[in-house]
Image 1 (spheres, rainbow, N blue to C red):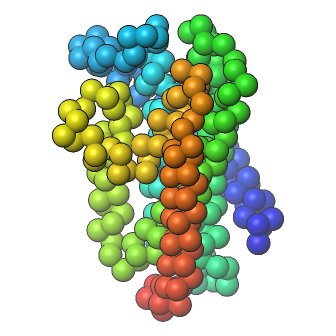
Image 2 (cartoon, rainbow, N blue to C red; image 1 turned 180 degrees about the vertical axis):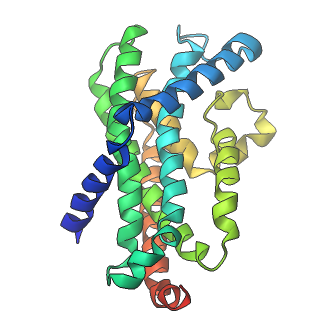
Amino acid sequence: MLKYILKNTLSDYKNSYKSSFLSYSWVIIHPLLLLVIYSFVFSTILQPRIDPNNDISYTVYLSVAILPWIVFSNAILQGTLSISSNIYLIKKLNIPLYVYVAKEVLQQFLNMFIVLLLLIGFLYLNGISFSMKWFLSIIPFVSLFFFALGLSMFLASINIFFRDIEKAIGIFLQMMMWVVPIVYPWDIVPQNFQWVIFYDPLFYYFNSIREVLIFDNWINMKHYLVMVISSILMFIIGLYTINKLESDIRDSI
């Protein structure tokens, strides 16, 4: 089944850009536009404080989190719709429903490779040299994939019965971008409200990526545990839900 998922994901990925004039350029156009807009608004108008001990520009600080966030949020959006948008195929083919979700999420995460190349080049141009610690970011990225896959399987399953989910998920992700937070340093949040950030597992994924790629720091062991445990739990919950509801989903479509 894994071979089938990989083969069809690559085929769908190529076909999705085949008829586009700009082709794979769209993978970086959207993230770059958002990066330019947020960077201008925050660095020019709001001027957030990053780290007084490091000469890091806000644009660099933002890029390391917002580029992976765009891939993650697109994976959740497309993953949530993966069952409802493939009803015709589901009726014809006896393939487990999690396959449809996995294909969509994996397809979006293939963009992560292109985004990472863009990010590495951008960091280099801004004077941030390669460090062996960068390899530590593999754990946050891999954990983020399984978290996204698990959450997508869960949402795609219940979306069949509650279609409001597919309409609300975009708003939820937009809200989470500010809660994580992606576009501003977490330590500018008043202490009375910082607990909201610390109880959000996504904070540890994106903060760890920043700590490694920008500040060349080791990742806190507690943060590693939160990422690994939360991704495994989310994956198990999502897989259990989609397998448990599969017969009901097939009966309802």
